[in-house]
Image 1: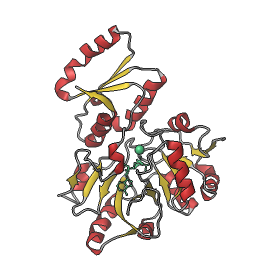
Image 2: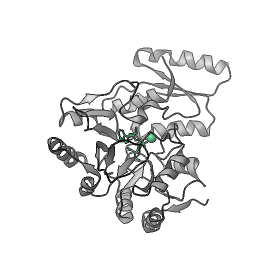
Image 3: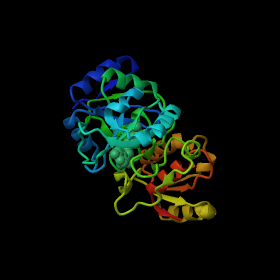
Length: 315
Ligand code: TXA
Ligand code: MG
């Protein structure tokens, strides 16, 4: 299959492919998404297949107008206040809300909930608008790989496998995925740290619950699978053991391994660059990435979560 390249100017052509049941990768402010029409179950099945995604892990539905939310989700009276507060503060933006799904909306995960977000990226919003339908989209990476934060990342994973990619020259602004908040449980719960800083959410929901560990039956299905892993083995050094990195590096290099050290605290905008750095290591056939825990404040939960999940070892 030929994968067509579109730009902001030719976005209508990309939308026509969505209308015909195709798959288009598009940039958002977090990471690239692998989009299809939410109301076309066959298209959704194709997305799962091409990504290699387990069937029980549902997709986020992306909308271009806050009003669309009410066509997709049933919001209980006691939740409407909090929903309104969250969407007026954070939409458009990197916040995903899990709500009760309207009965007429079908998906293949079998859950009675739906995850919805309105992205902020200009191309994403225009794309969804011209599609005239909500767009279901997981991150545009082969399951388990680092998310795609540039056009080239998507090309590397999906050239010849999807109908098209909307091209931009830059890396996605934030570089980690959206923050996911579940509003269907008794207390609002963070299911995934992401592009909205936890402190900003606490200003609106001071008692927000954080799901720390992957339980036997995770609330967010995505939490139980391998994630964000480059081909290189990632070894995470906690701050306490950071001074052991260079000794460790030497030992690996003595055995002829190619090793890269990433000190996350020395890189400006690490959230934006992390997945790109992982993918660059793959291009150079690096065997090991020795990476530090991130000690900055902004988005540190999200950054450390991604590093931890990508790591094969924590020291
Ligand atoms: O920033 C993002 O969120 C990106 C861009 C493309 O929007 N998308 C993204 O999608 O990260 P994905 O599929 O890689 O991750 C979606 C996460 C998964 O952990 C999934 O389990 C969770 O959201 N999720 C989706 N629907 C859910 C639901 N109904 N209940 C609980 N968790 C849900
Ligand atoms: Mg993903």
